[in-house]
Image (cartoon, rainbow, N blue to C red; front, side, top):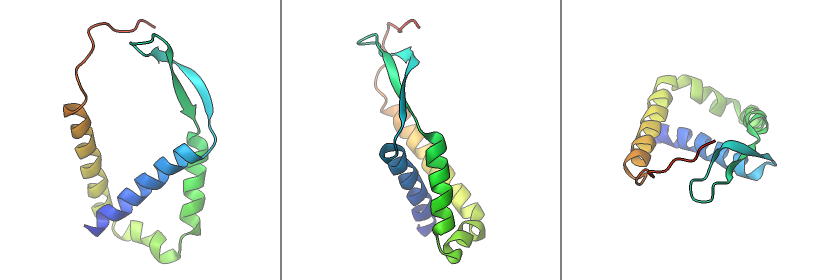
Length: 103
């Protein structure tokens, strides 16, 4: 169960940085079917990536090497978490609307 903690910590840190770091907001090409307005996207992926790298380099050496030492366990944990969340969203996603927004 401890292998899931490392993967969940990385997911949570990445998500928190996405919301906390400044981002450029742009209108997308997809639109909301209810209001017919383009969806807004936050573009800060490069800042989040560099922040994760800096935070990783600031970790103690033992923590840095634990990701390498337990590579396969972390890989399996990340896949199980990703597939579980995707399955949850698939079955709880609601009904599809009949009318699609034309872009």
